[in-house]
Amino acid sequence: MRLLVGQDADDAGKLAAGVVLGAVRSNPALVLGLATGSSPLPLYAALAASGADFSGISGFALDEYLDLPDGHPQSYAEVIRTEVTEPLGLDPARVHVPDPHGRDHAAHAAAYDAAIAAAGGVDVQILGVGSNGHIGFNEPGSAFGSRTRVVPLAERTRRDNARFFASPEEVPTQCLTQGIATILEARHLLLVAHGGHKAEAVHRALRGPVTEDFPASVIQRHPQVTVVLDGAAASLLA
Ligand code: F6R
Image 1 (cartoon, helix red, strand yellow):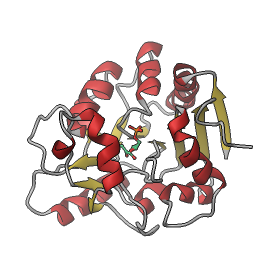
Image 2 (tube, protein in one colour; image 1 turned 90 degrees about the vertical axis):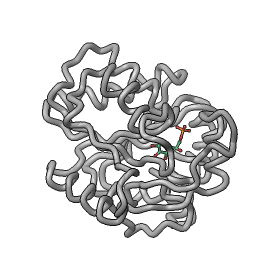
Image 3 (cartoon, helix red, strand yellow; image 1 turned 30 degrees about the horizontal axis):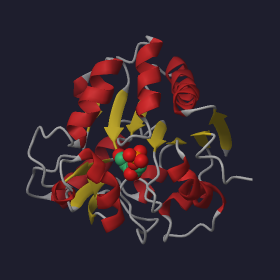
């Protein structure tokens, strides 16, 4: 596991962007796994500022809320469009987000995993970590062998994400998420976190026991992981 620590969130974003840019330089048809939430925003901003050509890459989002109307600004389809696809100049036809609007979520989830495999698998998977240790929306107790599926959001996650919505009640209760086994199939995991509120989760993910009770700890089993933090998020690492 490689650990990079930036001076602040923007600096960490630039370091993480360096990892992605290096991968895109050696493979302009890179398959990039996309996280949403606040953690990867400095990374996406640094990628957009780089002026690099991302038109050949494909993207697969980690997750999507259920029960938001199509086009809701906090749906991850919209967040990916406004924070990633448009600023980086990705080809929208190659950017995939789990679709929560169909009738058969299980069939769609299986098709989503199959689409990742058909694209050759994810080369670099960007990950954030939830304060309860989730990756994607694999909440504590998720099986390490899990695949893409519908899951209920933990109450702590709904509280954490209430900041994105007008009221806490508006936060969806369920989502479609890539499974832990799906995530682990990526060739390179790039976990990003910033801020002192992430220090404990980062410490448990990197140094704690590997357990389904704290899903992010599974990254310790992956052969190629880069973790990029700011000083505050790294503050509990010895
Ligand atoms: C989002 C995702 C989540 C977030 C996590 C941290 O696609 O998969 O695991 O990465 O909830 O969220 P932020 O970055 O907002 O603290």
